[in-house]
Length: 226
Image (spheres, one colour):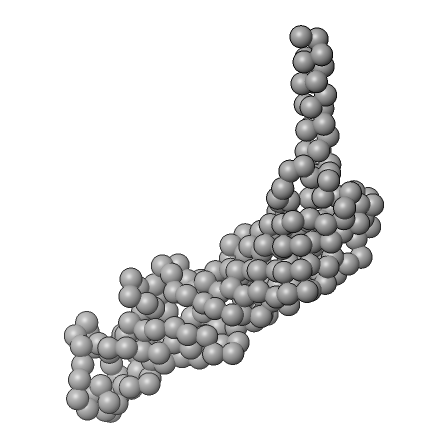
């Protein structure tokens, strides 16, 4: 039984050393990857054991997250990135001397709140969540008078811009048709430029949610620099 106890103790020590080394390396990587984010992110290193990845200088997957990232005056909330195939030498990972982090693939996403999009659009129209898309409301001039109009709208990505296209229009909660609908058509459509995601990731898709627009994108063969 003594040999079994000794074996278990040895395994526990190895596992403990592995976790300590992972914690140290994650801290170094968090320091190195914070420049683009404007603050220190949380970094998690997937895969066990860690030390075999560290010795080989290649990590299967890193997960980077930050509650808020500022980009061109816009708040990207709940930012997360998955880095697949990360190449960092053992000495750099444990010694804090990162100069470049080659990554085979990087996927990132974040949430842009409707209040932030409303301010960014600067049109006087307000965006909010709706079970069927995005609700746009505002006061506009039509047929010689000011009316409070709303529409449940669809969203799409066109290049680096969010395009909001109004569907059925309503005034005072009542759907409008005929000349008034024709006069209002296009008045609630919006095109809002969006910044690229951190680490040079260009937007590839977006979707409407209850709190805002989720944006995401990916990149291959990138080199991140602290």
